[in-house]
Image (cartoon, rainbow over all chains, first blue to last red; front, top):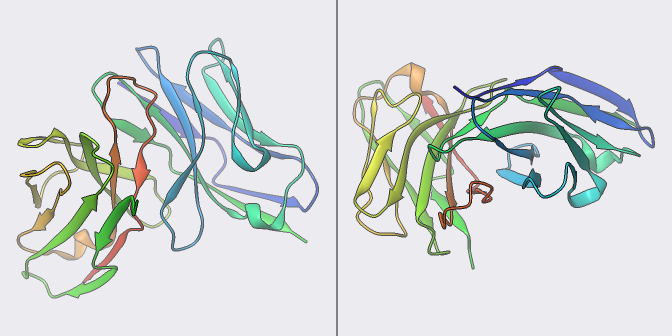
Length: 112
Length: 115
């Protein structure tokens, strides 16, 4: 069975400081992994996805994530937070059954 | 391309009423999904479809029905609305060419309140 654990429900950072949103997954299969962002009252937008070609994945708006199989982690990072980054972030794992499993989300607050 | 569109944006239902949430995509995607998002939670899969005429249950299908008569449309039916179905509903689609890493594209959501 697949599952995703987002280790922090809320993260607060100051503008211009680094962002780290943590995600661990459980998969009995070689997983596909995604990070989505949801701004208030909006749908979900893809930030980046792990395609197995490279363990360090670069996404939109300066976000990156590193796939670490030994740690079953896929943490999301950004070197310098911007006010517009304030949103809800979801880590997602998919399996061969065409289903996608979402974490419970991490709410990112950016302090001016 | 409009992508994935959902109607209505917001609806209030009385207990026991029925309604259909509409979802349409114009990307010729094979796979379509319905999710619900409860406050402070991630998305839970209700139903999905891998092509016209084929649907399957997800994690939380009770109280819902779906049909997929065309590639473009994937309506979600609530037959007897209950307060537990108060949620935000998202429709999504992806190409379904076989690559597991395909991106899902999401609609803007339908906010449903059952009183």
